[in-house]
Length: 125
View 1: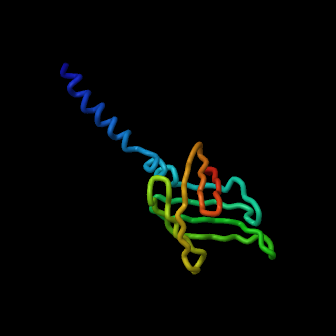
View 2: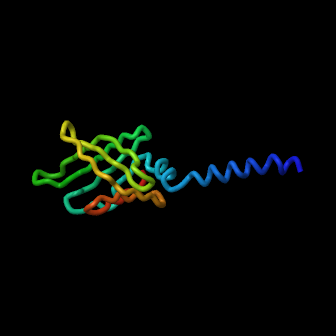
View 3: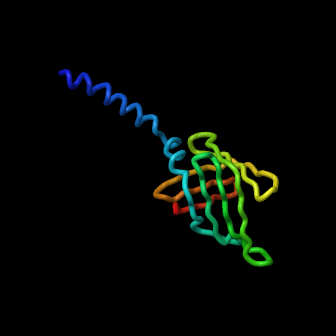
């Protein structure tokens, strides 16, 4: 009887802890890391994105231009606006910052970032 009295609060604590770990908490943890673009197309030749626990983000891309391949590096920040979307604010060099609300989905080490004009898929590195 005494053992069950101690066990019940522990089971309830565990249940409440797990219930608090929704998609938003999972995404906040899983987004951190390095991701490689899986299917570049058009003038986008390739790229990767790095999300840091501090809220900083680095986007590295290679674009085809008239003069040949050109690297493009964007740096900035990200923050979750809700459980499924982030606000990214990035800039290239000393350029003007650009801000976007981006839908995020992560499954099986694949991350999809949804923009108003389409989505981009990355694979965890």
